[in-house]
Each structure stands twice: as structure tokens, then as C-alpha cells.
Length: 287
Image (cartoon, rainbow, N blue to C red):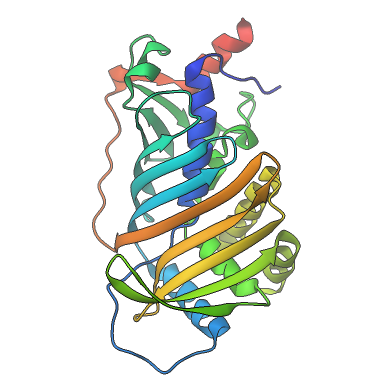
């Protein structure tokens, strides 16, 4: 049986973590631009940028938009792929707290806190943690409830989805954060994405990551998506946008990449200032 944590902390955990993982899921590589190259077809340009995104080791990015269940969100994050670690500061309109919340991912454990209002719901402790490895097991913590399974996958996965669109077009040349880019757009359905995934030859880890992404969109009820990519002169994605209608409202996220392949250090909060989400949910279940 799945249970919900009562109070502000529980509502904030669900909305904020889900928003963070959906947003982080869109991340791809960025660059400062380079010399002009022979013009490719829109589909080929998108495919090349998607391929380049697979080699990144870390990201620094900024996110804005709207996520179902969380409303308007703003965030800035740093993330490394190996080892997987993330540090994000985010403000969500419907997170149930005032002010920004910080999310950290260290050694497969996610921490959420840095907010005085949340501390009131956690006996004065500033941080709440949960082990991603325990979600979905006998403890009654469902990955569908928190969306936390998304955190274990390469955040470049969503950028590759546009390669499955049958109608990628070039919008024009635009400057994003001082970088000259070419803007591409395409529409795609989840059915198309699943069909395309079956045809691709992928390693087990990559395939699993893309399947998790599809499951996340299915859980939101976002059957059709429009995706925009702004690609720089080095064939890297400088900005990425995904938007569509979901069951609980619009999904519209824009991610702008500030840097990549730079060292990222994320530390876990002090243990004596951290509450366990698993323990909080057990207490809620016991009444």
C-alpha cells in the first residue's frame, strides 16, 4: 500500500522532486559555438546534436517553465553523470513552501531542504532524505509517487527523442545567451517514441533510461509533445524546450545550458540535521 506524507513537507516532497526530475531529464550538452560547417538537413542536425550529448560528463543549466502539479518553476542546477550527483536550487509555485528549495543527489540518496518552512514539519531538521534504491520496494514508497526513478538516468535521454520526429523543421537563426544558434522544431507522440525505441540498437542501460522517460510522460498523460532545440556552431544543444498538454495541466519547460564537462562537487548535508522520508512515511501509516 502506498501512503502519502501528511503536511506541508509531504506535499512539497512530491511536487518538488517530481518537478526536479522531469526538468533534469531534459538536459543536454551546451557549447560556446564554433566555425560554420556545411549545412545539414534539420533531421541530420538534430541527430548529430543528440549523439554529441551522449559524451558529456557534467552539466550546469538553468530551467524555467510549468510542470503539472508544481505550477511555475525556476531552477538552476549542476549535475555530473559518473558518479551521478546533482545539486539544484528551485522555486515551484505550488510546492507548498515559501522560498527556494535545494535538492541534492549523492550516492543514490536524494536530499531536499534548505528551507525554514520545511524544517518546521521535520522536528527542526533542515533536510529530508530518501534512498532511491528503496523506492518501490516493500516499504510502500512508490516510484510513481515521487518520480525519483528518473534521477538514476542520463539526463541527455530526452534530447534524443526529437530524432524520432517525422517533421523536424528549421525555424531560423537565433542568439541564445550570446551564442549564435539554429532553432529546430518537431512534434512527436509517445506511440512514435515507443516505436522508434524498438527499432534502435541501444545498450541495456541507455534503453532502460529512455523507457523510464517514456513512463514518466505516460504518468503525466502527455501523449503528444512539441520539442524545440537550439543548436550551436559546434553541434551541441544550447537550449531545449518541451511542451504539451498533460492530464493535470500544461507541461512547458525550457532548459538553457550554461556550461558542461566541468568538475561538479556535491556533498551530503550533515546527518544530524537530516530526517528520513522512509521513517516519516512509516509514522504516517501508523497514524
